[in-house]
Each structure stands twice: as C-alpha cells, then as structure tokens.
Amino acid sequence: RKEVEQDPGPFNVPEGATVAFNCTYSNSASQSFFWYRQDCRKEPKLLMSVYSSGNEDGRFTAQLNRASQYISLLIRDSKLSDSATYLCAHLGGSTLGRLYFGRGTQLTVWP
Amino acid sequence: EPEVTQTPSHQVTQMGQEVILRCVPISNHLYFYWYRQILGQKVEFLVSFYNNEISEKSEIFDDQFSVERPDGSNFTLKIRSTKLEDSAMYFCASSDGVLGGNQPQHFGDGTRLSIL
View: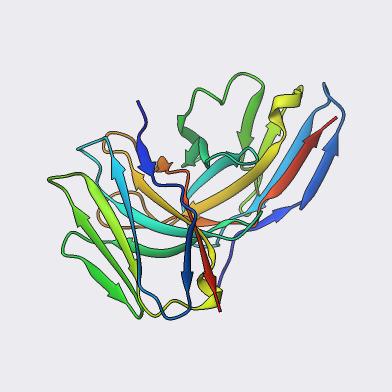
C-alpha cells in the first residue's frame, strides 16, 4: 500500500503559466500536510503547510480535500526559479512525527 | 534564519565499516529525525527522537542503526557495519512540536554516504 502518490511528471511549462499538482494519500487519519520543494540532490525545503481551509502564499495556493483524500498545489505566473521537484508529505495519523513523502512531481519552467 | 546543519557533506566508506553522521538541529527544537533518500527514490523516514529516546523507527532502522544525542546540540546517526545498499543521502530534520497544528520539519542539507 502506497501512503502517498504523486504524478511524477515531468511538467514542462513556459514562464508565466499556471500549473497544478495533485497528491493523494491513503491514511484518512492523517493530520498535517505539507508541500516541500527539492532541487536536484538537495534537501527538501518547506514550501508551505496545507490547511483545511486552503491557504495562499504569494503565487502558491495549497488546498486539502479530506473527502477525496488529496492535496493540491497551484503555482501561478511560473518563474524559471520554480523549476524543481515538488514533494507532498503528511504526518501519519497514528504516529508521532513520521513524515510520509510522495516521490515528487518534477516541474521545468522554460523561458 | 536558523537552520539544521549536517556534517560531513559527503562520506565515502568501505563496506563493513562503521560510519557516524552528525547533525546540529535548530536550537529551540525538541524533536529530531533522520530520513534517507536513495538516488531516484523518495525520501524515507528512519527514526524520530524526543526527550532522549527513540519515539518511532521504521523497518529500515534495524540493529545496525543507532542514534544518540551526546550533548545539548548534536544528534548523530551511527551505522555499525555498512552495506552497499546503505548508499544514499541522509537528511536530519528537526521540529519544535509534533501535534496540535501544522508544525513542519526543517531539513539539513544532507550527507551523501557512498559505500564502496
């Protein structure tokens, strides 16, 4: 059973485009959800937490759909610097602090 | 901005040798973690640590692995007898809480472990 599933991509979009990623999770008791970005051979860097009501941080919008057990990330007005792998992650509902990561969705923004 | 630091950045070791990976978590954080990422695969949880003891460990974290917080700042991962399949990036992470809201984990820049 895969805890977290993501479309690996790659997504190739031009600068200025809007792109969206989805991520599904299997544990209905999961409490907290996050999006991380990972550049090639670097550490995951927290992009944003995902709140039940949805949240926005500049060009980034995250949403949580508990009924369908997925989270989404929308990037508006894509920049070249947005090129990275985007990892979704959640804390398992019955465990303390164990983050389950998806394999990531690769995004390339071209000029 | 405070950050998690890890040393060394790259460790090359002969199979069967012991290796110790070091981490300095963010100073006011109380929860510490080790993850690993084999090249091309997803980030996998190894172990969590709180109040000087292991909170949880995954099936990867077998008897060859151990963690320690020898002083007030360092958090180490030891692999006693390394195997080829231990080659991976090892990430340390820390957070200032676990439950009660979204308290994300912050990652160090990793140690690349290469077993020959």
